[in-house]
Length: 232
Length: 232
DNA sequence: CGCACCCTTGATGGTATTCAATTCATGTGG
DNA sequence: CCACATGAATTGAATACCATCAAGGGTGCG
Image (cartoon, rainbow over all chains, first blue to last red; front, side, top):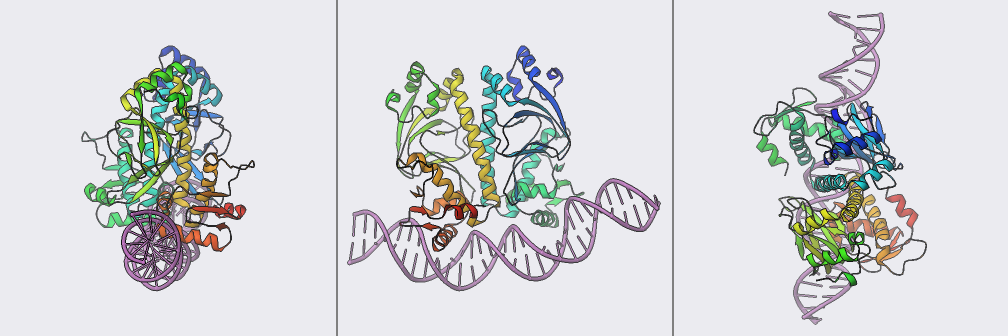
């Protein structure tokens, strides 16, 4: 039932393309779903049965080899879109990293609705193009950067991404202290290195006075220029 | 001028979404452009001024670090779409790998036209979603696979991609002998390894009787199951 | 024929992985 | 409240893999 009126991402998600009447219809085909950290939503290779908008929380998209090596190929935040419309199967798994709430649609329902609402498809297209650009830039990091550069790039990337999420954002637009929403293992899975390598690079950055690590999840950037230099 | 009537990719490119009258209009805003192997079309970071359809030839999309390391983040074939509509800047360079012909549009013209033709945007959206899936799968290869697995995966991928291009395709849908459209250096840039590593893996595959390499550009798969096993 | 370019092959070294042990944080029950 | 268990993170040592550096081969083209 229509809870779109109170939806916190109503104006940031692709739904923003719709007017009051249209959103009313969309709300009849979608439903809220709550996930606990670690819960899977979609499995790699499965039939593409559902798509969703993220309302709250963080989820990972992963690809795996048969022998169990895993790579995080994307991370989605509130207002981001999940799933594979207009396609038979999902190319990757989707799993909640934190407790999360999503707004799910049966793919067939969504496909039909989208076909009738070009403005919605337009927003989805822009989002997908952005995501493709971001993904391609990340390929350079995965394929060519050293572990040091990877970790430095990752930390700078996080300090940007978490600005919205953090209400105490300073006006100059940089966030020097924040809590990582990822474990060391997950950071490794994002960067394509082992947990030990992540750990060693982090402690080195701390030892060199570029970072402070008050707790395992907290990062404080002390020397941003140096970090940017290391990012390559 | 309207050369769409004779365009060889008319029914495969996104233009297939348009009827006769519409294609007439589109043809007035697009123009053919011929590229020689090595010619750049778009530079990474530049303002996004043009988009294009590939008519003939193969082009690479690349990202580079400041110190000159290059990664091929995508390869486009005839009927594929190039460029960044609805966006300010291009995230990657586009360069012809072979002699090529493309159909270019000023981005602003294309954006306007696309906005008025939802069917075109729909096709573009599907293409972009496909490309995003492919790109994400490639991330697993770049980040986690060994050089051996990378080369094996690459060769299998090529044997699939080149089926269309090759008219003598056998009915069973596998292509066991083909010419690589890439130099060893370019293969390295695609796989995120050095040219020497590519060379060593190729000769090893030959020595083990899995491949034959009659010329530098020609590959003949002798033992596909073994190659698939190596691909991981 | 000779030059240029691409590719191959060899020797060496560096970086990240792997395996292993220890420390640290968190939560549970006595 | 503290001992203890559990899982995460760190640290260390040894190894493997790939990059780098360097030289030589082959192919095609003027």
